[in-house]
Length: 312
Image (cartoon, rainbow, N blue to C red; front, side, top):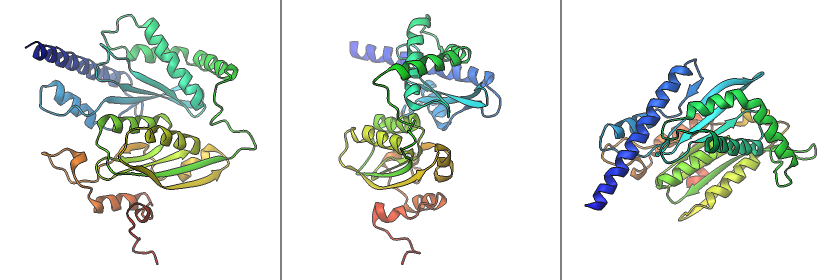
């Protein structure tokens, strides 16, 4: 009986937290209501969380994440990426990242640390949602934050200079095609999506059996992505193909990307209400159409040993 009571308390806490997240998201949607100001990659996560809080028997398989695109710097849009763990605000803190074309990756990490310190020191009532408070602080303090983190980075002997190559170094665009025996773990899937977005990589991840991951972007970031993902527990995982192109500027990445919608999870399977999507077999026809749409039909030879019909 005690175990059952503890589970009920945990379940109630989880539902309360998710309801608070959804209420706060609705408030933010009303405040940041101009086109493109607040974006969600997959509104299915809203439906999933809403169904769960309504008591429906659904698998809680997503976290609420969204981004704000705000004109906080002269001539530059700034993205504020928000990812909410299931027990925010009661027990866990949100993951908030500031991103802009003028913010280098090492400085981005310093900004993330500074945001977490602000939450620890300045957010008093952490039983109530506070993303809006943090966003307001970022709006008011961004220039000071950029200056202080830039100074810390420049004076930190351990700071990385990645993404800031000298004139003698090359900028390399890279696309990695990664193949694994299978991918079903939800935590692993979330790590893949979060890491790709952290490094501003575009591409896709196909969970199930087999698992296929494609990421593209700055080579230093794709290699760091590979290092992190490879360190997770796998039955078997390998890079099937890496494509590299030397460019003059990161601005050239725009024309080289084949997945311009960012990074997202794709299933390539027929819907089945009685089965988990990652348990369903891949529909090869859907996958091939997807590859063709993104001018990547050539990769099926490396992934499956299938030649394109136009190949000699």
